[in-house]
Image (cartoon, rainbow, N blue to C red; front, side, top):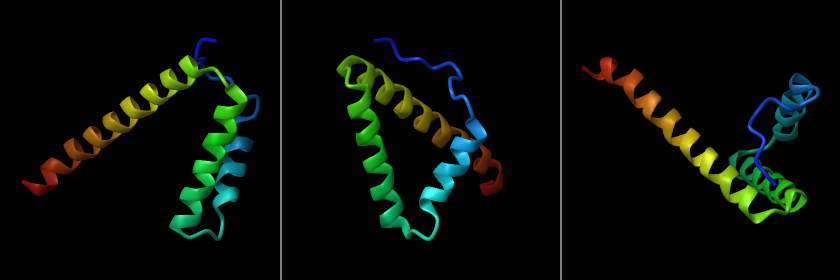
Length: 79
């Protein structure tokens, strides 16, 4: 199975709204738990180890890129 990184949600805005609603009235610990449970449920549904590893690599790279962008935007403010 190859990881599909192209837009593939039939109703992306509805999904995003449902994802936000899932977290409504949760504290940070409950939100982290809900995210972890959702990740594990979806990973189980996908099932393919190589695809899951590729997804984790993409997620890590995206998080590192977002972190670097945040620091580069904040740097002029600190100067």
